Image 1 (tube, protein in one colour):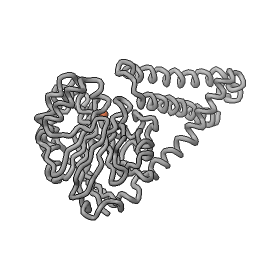
Image 2 (tube, protein in one colour):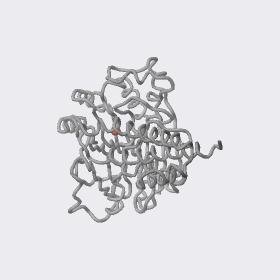
Image 3 (cartoon, helix red, strand yellow):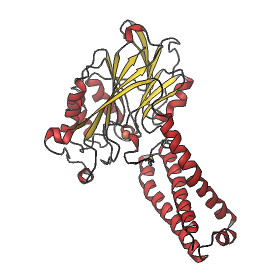
Image 4 (cartoon, protein in one colour):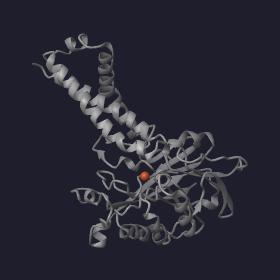
Length: 382
Ligand SMILES: [Fe+2]
């Protein structure tokens, strides 16, 4: 027997997995209640395994002859097998290549990353008391190795006085017990070395009903020269959002909510906008100044089309955590976005908007492989 039937079986199973993961990612990009989201992964795991078992069983039944299998199956099954092959042999390699090509656009002048092994620096693993802390112990888990990425963005539209303006971008802190508070304290101490002008935090502060108490002691250590801005994410929406907002305000962070305000930045006006959609109301830009630089904080990168439509110059986003587990060459798999893994992390330029998507600092599940937590300093240059 030649290897072709088995290769086609592998393609059908891979394509089926790709189709399932793509639809699951799309659903995770929707504002569904947490109760609906939780069983989705299990349902999809069952669907993937059932599909692969069905293909393998059918091929065995037809004596490894694909032509007989396709002729003897329902037309919908045959058509679906075709879709799976296209997904495996055409779409998957093409989208992977495209995803690599769209990263690092010309506006990203430089990107220097320094990795700090927080566990090594503390002298212990800051496992904390989170429900899933046992996962943080797994070998090769990078959840305590933080990338401090200094990215220089060339934005010719900024006023000369803003040349060198530093924006510290933090995202997805997910206070839930693991990592422990010592982890966040260590990260914030390193951030202070950057001496940022503006601090921007793009949501997902808490993951339990208790850990909003960490906001003041941890984020209260942040310092900035001009302003600190924040929006909430979907995980905050599933908890006591009003309490989270109150605590953030107490440490001096300006909650943009679903609105906009103007900042005086080195004598020039900057319009700062918050987009917490689709989990909260999208911003209303009525009365928003038509001129001037627009900085938008959006929890999800899925709001990029909105940003382009509303002439946002720079959008900061998080939410997708880089996929948390990234396979060599292939990249991320599970990304909660309607665009699947297209905007899973890094810098993107789709005129007139430049978007930086952070991999975030933590997650509800403390698993990171080939996808370290990230804090970024964006330096604006003319
Ligand atoms: Fe998150």
